[in-house]
Image 1 (cartoon, one colour):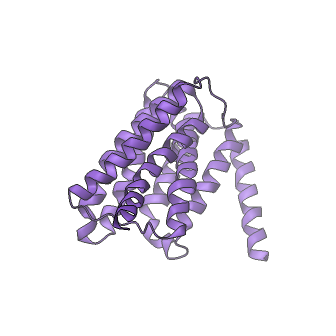
Image 2 (image 1 turned 90 degrees about the vertical axis):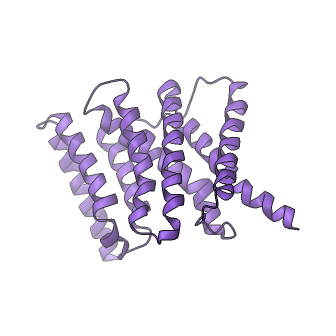
Amino acid sequence: KRKKWRIIKDFRQTFFAFKKLRRMVPMKVIAMFLILLYVCVQFVLSQKLSMISVYYSYYFDCVFVVFIWGLFSRKIKLKTNITITQLPLKIVLFLLSGFVVHFLAIKLHFLVPFDFTSKSTILFLLVIGPILEELVFRYALWDVSSKIFDHRYFALSFTTILFSFSHLYAYWSVPNELHSFVIYQAIYVLFLGLALGLLRKKYSSILLTIIFHGAFNLGFYLVFFSNTIMRI
C-alpha cells in the first residue's frame, strides 16, 4: 500500500515539474521528449518491462494519456457533427472491413494468434483495445506530435505509421510461424490507422474513432463466430 501511494506521489511530482517546465522550455522540445519517452518505454524497453508485468504496456498507456490530458489541459472531444444517417453506414463499412481482413487471413493460411474463446481476449479486442489505442494514438500522440511540426498532415502521418509499427514490433518476439500474420497485420493496421486518422481530422471526435475501431475489431471477431456457428 505504501509503495502504491509512493508511485502516485512520484507521478504527481513529475507532473507538476512538467507543468513548470512548460513556462521555461519551448513546447517543441517537451513534445519531442514525450514522444521519445513513449517510444523508449513501449518499444526499446518493452521486453525488460514485460518481466515486471504482462500488462505494463496498458498501464503505461493509461498513465501517458492522463499525463498528456493534464499537461496540455486539452479536453477529450466526444461530440461530433457527423449526421445520424452517415454514422450507421460508416460503422457497417468498418465492420465489413474487419470481417474481410480476417477472412483473407484464413484464406492465405496465416496463423491468427488470438484465442477467441477467451473472455479476456474478447474484452481487450472489443472494448479495452479500441478505447485505449484511440486515446493514445488519435488523442495523446496526435496532440503531442502536432506541437512538433504544425503541418496539417504531420500528426496524421506520424500517428498512422507509429500505430502500424506498434503491431509490427511483435515480429521480433513471436515464433517464426507467426511472422507472416504480423506483417499482414501491420499492413492492414496501417490502412486502418489512416482511415481513423482522417476521420479524427475531419470530425475531431475521439468517440467516433473508438466506435469505428470497435466496429472493425467486431468484424474481425465475427469471422470466428460465424465459423463456430457453421460447425454446429
